[in-house]
Amino acid sequence: MPEQLGSVLIANRGEIALRIIRACQELGIRSVLAYSEADRESLPVKLADQAVCIGPANSVKSYRDPQAIISAALAFQVDAIHPGYGFLAENADFAALCEQEGIGFVGPASDIIRRMGDKIEAKKIARAAGVPTVPGSLGAIAQYDEALTVASEVGYPLLIKAAAGGGGRGMRVVESGETLERDLSEIMSEAETAFGDPSVYIERYLTDIRHIEIQVMSDGQSTVHLGERDCTAQRRNQKLIEEAPSPVLDDELREGLAQAAVALCQEVKYRNAGTVEFVFDNIERQYYFIEMNTRIQVEHPVSEMVTGIDLIKLQLEIAAGNPLPLTQDDIVIRGHAIECRINAEDPQKGFLPNPGRIENFRAPGGFGVRLDTHIETGYVIPPFYDSMVGKLIVWGQDRDEAISRALRAIEEMQIDGVTTTAQFQGEILASDVFRSGDFNTAFVAKFLADQVS
Ligand code: ADP
Ligand code: ADP
Ligand code: MG
Image 1 (cartoon, protein in one colour):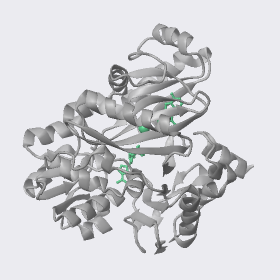
Image 2: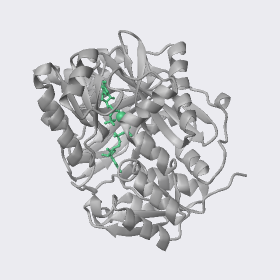
Image 3: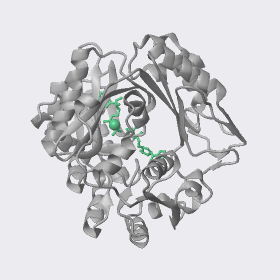
Image 4: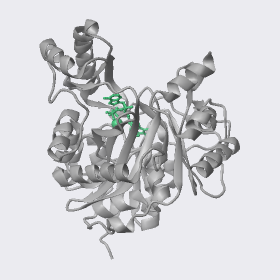
């Protein structure tokens, strides 16, 4: 029998808090939920074994406050903290604090979070591991003349990216040399304000690409992968629909991507769950590493559905100090899975967040349908946090069946009182372009523009 954690504090909210509570319950691990005043009435608070209010609605003083969370963890004498995604999940200082206090952190060691969290450093590590990276600057760009030199090599349009960026923020496309100097200084000060780090770097801006990422799991010694997820359906560099397997990869490319991700993890002796993200050039059919997320991702259920493996349980097992309980040969991809992120946003109003009271809620069901959500009838979506209110995940024997099933589930689902992205996602899934599988990261924006005109 593997070693097991006795108790875990969950430093997050919403659907991911619920997801972790459920895994803990199945494993017999005591779950303690740390919540903010705004989430007092939420489903995760009701379902956790224990719950503790750690501060006000403002996440800086609750979900993002390392001391508030450490204090709760010590008071409830938990063995480990699961950070979920967002908030403190990729905060190296917080992971280091856990290490100092002797509290387990469900994730990699703090020094790995620090190195991978710096996208410039991560690209250097990728290159050292022999993984192709997007052509661009080798390090940070601080001066206009350095930017000019790189620009003459990579050409226009180019992309200036913040080393500490994330969540689709901290990126700017530069169309021509005319605006380069101004764009550089603006994005540097934006990065300083948003992430506390002005470091930026330059990449070639690729215009006909897909986003394909590899789910990995490591124990500090060895690494397995759980195949790829295709997250090409994005709006403003943020994922809207994810699927696995990718409709465009052949076996050789698929294996190349997976082995690149594994090589990167082995290079840093990675531990716990991670995702290695790539962009895939449709024309050249070549992949390039862009970044690694050192945490569980929003879209992890897509991989769970096609492998039958519970990634949160695996995270908890690794965090308890066990070696990987499976080998690469144990992992078999079966069928096709699609996830829609249900955001309380209005696609017709530029995805404007739309918090409020859910007057009536009906969950979809049936074979191959999974809904990960914390919403209920009467739930009031607070305005303080991310607008994602749930994820609809479907499994089908093949891509066509998964699409039909997703459309059926979206029809069945009812969320009255607030506008969500669900209907729009249904329109995308039903479109000929999505069904063909032949599209790029510009597809959603174009689809929306065509609808409006
Ligand atoms: P990925 O899809 O790669 O996991 P994202 O950047 O979309 O990456 O996910 C992390 C984002 O999720 C954060 O930027 C944050 O805004 C958001 N987030 C953090 N916590 C939650 C939560 N509990 N519910 C919904 N969204 C959250
Ligand atoms: P984040 O940390 O915000 O997730 P990423 O580096 O993962 O940032 O990039 C997010 C998205 O931005 C990618 O999925 C892709 O759509 C787009 N993107 C990133 N790098 C490039 C690039 N060099 N050219 C074109 N698009 C890019
Ligand atoms: Mg990313």
